[in-house]
Image 1: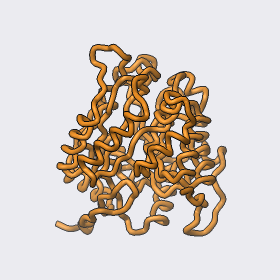
Image 2: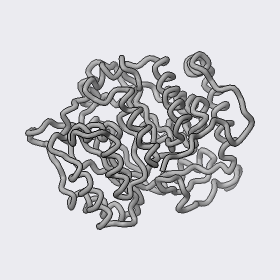
Image 3: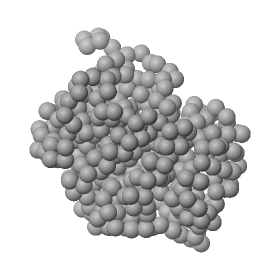
Length: 369
């Protein structure tokens, strides 16, 4: 079932949309405090209750075999490598079951572009997880994986999407967007889905009835203008379909990656906060902007909540991809609640449809002892 396209500023007075020039000036020239205040005011206009959501999820990878060899990835292995693996559906289901027993409500399933993987394997993973823990929301496979699977099965991507939709799946993670610029993609992921293909998979998914996220991985070879272009492409597609649920940026983690040897170091966390703020202002047809303690650090994630973000990402049980690049984070429910409250917001646990599952107490009044 196709969705009704989202219109910008539908819940308040119509204002002029930011164009490329104005967005670039905000990203590169606006004083940080002013930019954060603009975005925070827009966030409060949309969500005046001051609530910040988070999800309790787990991200097991069903395989680390990938022939695409993106230059920013330390996780993938080639077929035949000594440490290459492909889990069985029962093994993945057992991991998800353990996470569910700890409180996880969502499982994000992704792997690599494994030439031994076929559609029947994907469906077997979905069915095994559903049988083992029917209460878990399954959030599987990225747009690039769907394109790869269509090539594996020698069919169109709509056929693969429909097969997964018919298994009861209703959401798709938006990984693999990186930066939606062909210059950038040729430099960091020349064998992956290109800009047009990534957007086309998302558009097809939206028209079938999926909700997807939209992502950005910045801090490598892109320019500030390409960051703005990326946001504008997402906004244009959202105008047509209304199928994006949220925008989720993160910075490139050089770690033990091929690309990392050419990059002087990790980008400053201030850039993350600026991108969060710009996204809230440019993506006027997106409901949710995510700031994350996990992808950056606690301080940057917390500042993002004061720069337009209304979601704080996930309380992860398992994550492997960034860990392989040397980026490892751990936290607890109490830590997440404290971080959100100290930013002045009321925490709430959500599901993958952004419906609140559990509300928590608001922050203590200022001056409370």
